[in-house]
Every structure is written in C-alpha cells, then in structure tokens.
Length: 262
Image (cartoon, rainbow, N blue to C red; front, side, top):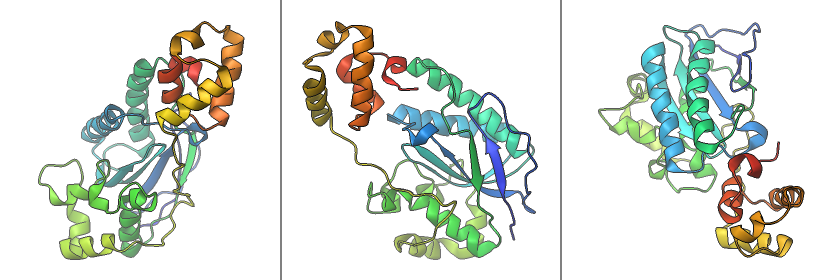
C-alpha cells in the first residue's frame, strides 16, 4: 500500500530543500523531537495548544490524520498528505505553534530538532503496526498501563464521533474488536529507530534540595541576589543534575531564557 521515506526540517530558520522519496499514497509516519531531546511540553496547556494548532493546520492543508501521540519531548503523527505538501503542512504547524510557545515562555528560536527521518510504510500490515506503535508510546515509557489511560494520544479518538482523527481507514482494515485486541498486547515493533525511554524526572522537593546544596540558596529571592555569572554556573550544574528547565524557573525565579542552556 505505502512506500515512503521523507526528511523534513521544522523549527529552524529554513526548510531543507532536498529530494525526498515520495509515498505512492501520500501516507507518512513522522516524528518531531525536541532539540537535543529536551522537553517540549511542560503543562497541559502546551499539549492542548499543539493539538489545537494541529487541528487548524489540518483544516487548512486538507491532510488526513490517522494517529498522534504527544510525549514530553517528542511527537508522533501518522498522516496522509492532502491539498498541501508535507513541507507546507509542517511549516504551517511549526510557525503557528512556535510563535505561541515562544511568547508563553519568553524565549526565541526553534523548538523541535531540525531534521528527522520517517520510516517507509510499505503495506497495510505496517500501517497497523505503526498505528499501534504510536499509541503504545506512553505504555512502553511506563507513564500509563493502558493506551486508553493516556490523555494526549489519538487512541480514544477511535471511540468518539467528534475527533480530528480520521478513524475510518483503520476500522475498515481491522475493525474495532481487533483494534482493541492489538493495542492490549504490548508489541516489540521498532519504528524510526527511536528509543522511547522517558528519563525519570526529579520531584520539586528533590530538585529544591539539590539547588540548596549547590548554591546555598533556600529561596528564589536569595538566588536572584547572586551575581549573574555565578547564577549561570549554578544553572549549568542544575542541568547536569537532571533538574528540568521549568523546575529551575520555579525554584530560582529566573526566566525561561536564563534557565535554558544554549
């Protein structure tokens, strides 16, 4: 059914103008990953805004969306090219979401790693395998025990009448009972050579203890009184200890731009 390999740039200054192998049917399994595997989504508003932008982009570009899964530092999409090319789809999606995201977090620049590859989807079996793989991301990462428990994937869209997901194609292939069955069995399929491991995050109490130990500061007010250069040295050390950018912001009072290490 499908034969595709694609390379797309999103989030940088320019879209790569390279020759890309085209799918005969226009269907692609694509992934967006945060720059340097960094976390992209920090709260529910981030996830919901991405889905909102995806829905608006879908309405404009006319593509079909078969599956999605938004993880903290990457996104999977299974889509079919419509009225506009993949390049235009991802430029619209990226421009809109990045503009909102940078305003919210007082930052500049791209969000997603510039270049990525999608693996060929050569037949109906591979299509269903990719569908299941996308929905099982949160299960494999240990976030939930069942696909239906994860809020930011399209799994539950297959049981809803009003959704941005085009569910008809997969339902015609396997039906609802088989859809449920295959998703209940954890698969060992590998797509896009992605390691879906989500690093364990420190709790705020753990992060606060590390910040106090390294900087000697017990409050954001104390940290902000430290000279700028010294603050920067501490922030680098916080990153090495695995403290997330949002935690650094909350626990030290510095801005998003200051909390990030470029």
